Image 1 (cartoon, helix red, strand yellow):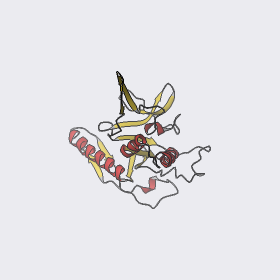
Image 2 (cartoon, helix red, strand yellow):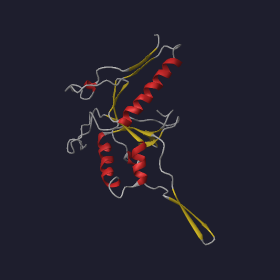
Image 3 (cartoon, rainbow, N blue to C red):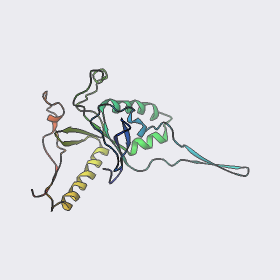
Image 4 (tube, rainbow, N blue to C red):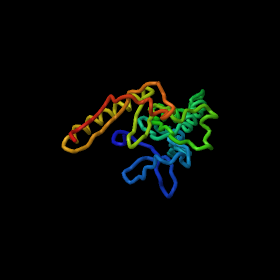
Length: 212
């Protein structure tokens, strides 16, 4: 993902896990249930530049800051944090619309990550949040070393297709290695009490495979 877009995901630094822009030195931590801060900063930062002012003698020019125009991905958001962003939508996307927030929501792709073992202190049930299948542009499940993807919105489908093309490129580049890469997207709605969320996975629409 980071090869194509800016990627924000849980990163551990100084013993604390928070969402941060990925780089090769980042210590990715998707096992921690809850980050210290909400990932909403990706859409509504604590501080930001809105205007640039320049004075020339008695003349004063004001230039608005450029709005977000590039796609970026926020990966690993839990269902509760997705709901928190939806609450922000009701405030900042209502009239008068916050143009900066609106631009980030338009270009930001939310890739949510299902919770396998929520804590007793979590409030998912209170707010009707399905932690095993959270909302988002793409919903993912992590199990036994595999990451399963389910595109939900048009933005999510577009991101999934980009990753599928990337997998095909990887397949072409790795034909001489003993590696197998699998990307899963087909889902159903049958559910399952033994493995909620995971039982929705029934197949693969993009498998990049090389000789073993």
